[in-house]
Length: 224
Image (cartoon, rainbow, N blue to C red; front, side, top):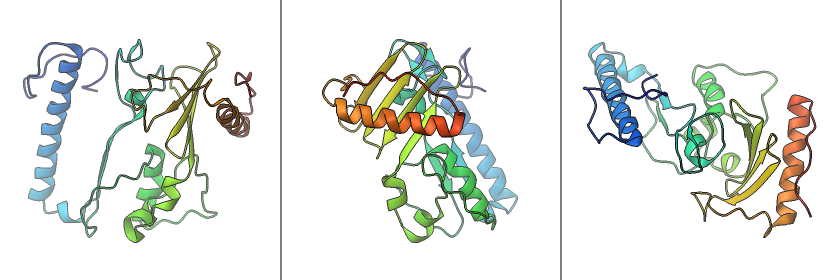
């Protein structure tokens, strides 16, 4: 919990300064060094070469990029885009620019452990195993899928369309936003008026998915 809420400077971390973001980076460096000691322990114990290591996060952090701080309340990129490092013995090291989600981790780890889900879990909106990518270099299932999610503490939802278009729906505030996160990664330009048909289509897809998973209906905001 070192990077949560009340941040204070850790002596074991790098001193970046005294701003909230600097304290956050200090805590990240503290955790990084602690994790380094853990890896050293794995090697000293002789189990590093047969250990799968997964390093990721459940969320990012806001520093007023969109008028708020902390996390769990909005759905902008600074809060939901997280790192993923997966180290598997026998798999060649490489960097993949394929977008994946945290929910992909459970079926991936289960597959690496030799388990098979029957019937197969097949919901590309949510988690799918990364083994086809890791073992067969099959990138297609991860590049062409819609992904849906919600904020932890609010009735706020998002839908990605092929990782370029992102629809954000704030139920409490009756706010709908459409972003091209490839050309506008900081999400400064709401393109709702420029692409009304796309927004309406994605809103329908999102509501259909929420109806299926939550059994609830929501008020439509997009205008075709």
